[in-house]
Image 1 (cartoon, rainbow, N blue to C red):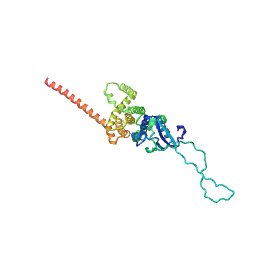
Image 2: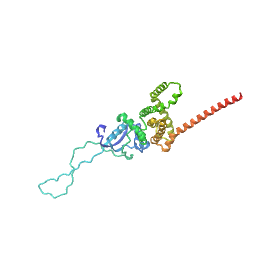
Image 3: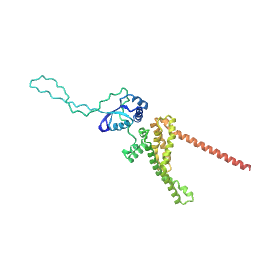
Image 4: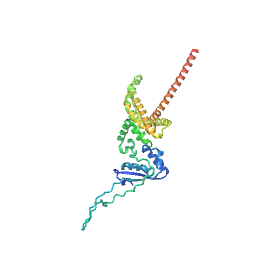
Amino acid sequence: MSPDSFDLSGRYSIYINGFRDEASREAVAAYLATVMRGKSLEELKESLENIPFLLIRSASGVIIQKLKERLEERGASLEIVPMSQPPAVVLSPPAEDSAPQPETPQTPVPVPVASPIPQAEPVKEPAVQVEAVAAPRTETIHWEDREEQGFFNSLWATFTEVMFSPSEFYSKMPPKGKVGSALLYAVLLGILGLILSAPTFFLLQFPIAKSLSLPTEDFYALLVGGYTFAVFFSPLIIVLIYFVLAAVYHLSVLLVGGSGGFDATLKIIAYSASTSVFQVLPYVGGFVSGIYSIVLWAIGFQKVHKLSPLRAGFAVLLPIIVGFILFVSVMALAVIFLGAAFLQGLFQHIQI
């Protein structure tokens, strides 16, 4: 059944009747694992061995249409069956005859009605199937659907959801694909954070301006030029920073037993750029933004990488702990070398 031949407001069942090849079966199973809650990839692979496979018992035409497009792209052969309506039944009047007839109980007789629209024959349900899904998770996050929802509407909806409903956001965030969209979101919010931090940045330069011999006007002209330069090249810098963060934290996620890929980690961190709005807070904006970003990463790792809260928290803190240890070690070595150089010079001075 083509998308044009059914009513999007109706309700339908959808069956998977076959696959183009084995690679197609694997691709369909991988896709369904991202949209069906509570079903692992291995369970879906095993279930798809039994064809025909009842995927959804009853869903709206809108959901069926979107799901049909995704599955056929991956080589699945589908059959969409409308939910049947019961036939109309009426009572026929008793037959008239000149001779008296004994009274007999009248029984309802169905009267032929107009032929219904041809429908596909119901497919026998497979012997083994996963339980019907009331509504597959075909929905995506707002920003990745901005062509339909509009640029600014999707941007605002994504921002508010990340900031105020992060568990719900990361639960429905597709772990694969649309990495470019996530990085674009991070760049936009990062530039916004730079702009919001401008007042604090310039206020912090007053002590420096007073300590230099440069005229104040020239000093601030240099600052404005440098700040404009930083904003202009910030997209490249932001992308590089998020790739490095994603690489470090993905290694941490793998060490604690995470199941998602690198794309998922990169998207989790990229969408946490929403916290850049805290840069508007004087002096403490960067600190608040960093703390809430860590909270968002922990929630994202838990929802997307299927980690327990304890493991997700440890995955977030592990790079911070390692970085702190390295920093302390470097500082200690620097103190040792400087102290040794100072003592050596002192001994030489005493000998002289």
